[in-house]
Length: 131
Image (tube, rainbow, N blue to C red; front, side, top):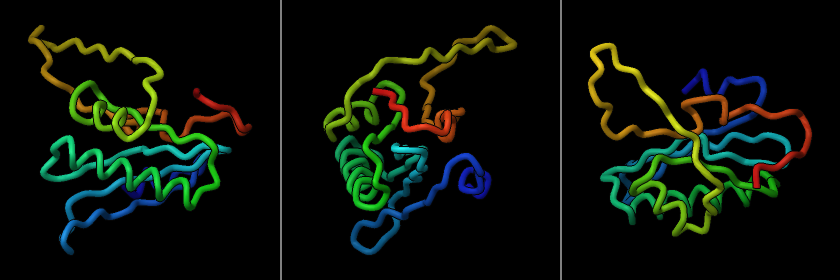
């Protein structure tokens, strides 16, 4: 987490999510010119309702603190992606992930977020948008 939050190309913060006073998840917001990105998130137990609540909280936090005009998030198909859509995010396409296992075995479900690549911080220094 220190590596992510210490990135010189984008400023960020990690937010703890609680339910009934107990920690149940977190999300990381990264800021670039005119954008705020939900770089990473986790919630337990991880039902679609849990993810929906987390994404709504992250969106409200981002819009209330960052001054951004665009909020970005990414998720692999499944519960997280469905929760993003229900939270009001728009599907802007897909990026294929390809794996070649040494033993040629099949790869199961893969969880992917912006923090798993350059999407967390990559920008051209101007107010450019992904939508």
